[in-house]
Image (cartoon, rainbow, N blue to C red; front, side, top):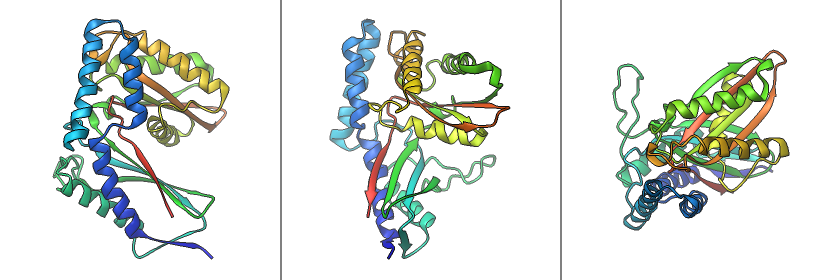
Length: 282
């Protein structure tokens, strides 16, 4: 028998999560900010990190957004193949949660219904929803409102196989260098390697919302994450672009098999807020 889950549970979860994401810094992000504050030795960078931490504390205490850009909501769904969703349409239920959360939380509405004519939808819908069917009888929903100061700095490039690891590293460093202070560093860097063009982009987005205290299970990619973090922080961009040794809090890499003739790479940048929150629904 399938596990029947009413879509109203998704609406209620998304409603709560979009507000919580915008008011409260995730524990893994807060921990990284505190760690880098302790080790930062450039006075201006240290002061800026202190202000970022204080700002997040005020936002949590007063239940106001950490950032003026409250984001376009990205949702990752992992739906167990033994789940039967009942009571309505899945996409409509998620968008209703976004609509209610942004209204109740007095969060800025940042979505336009037409990318060229620019008419605001007025309720921050629709969300961008990525759905994956997995084993099990539960639904995991991850909500990640995405500000565009950082999103606009993201890039995809189709490298040649001969470019290899060196080409991948060079492209990532070039992307971060070009971004400079625009994405509000310290940033979180999500990297997707392999698949097709769109697969690499989705991988990079998933990587950007992976917990900052979790490294890649694959030893090679774990070492690549650590190498990239060191090289990015050696660029000297620093908090808000004013210099120092804290340009990135973490680099998360996800990979996937690809074609013998290609090497797609995508870099998705998150600002220091890096809103993400997950919940299991059963």
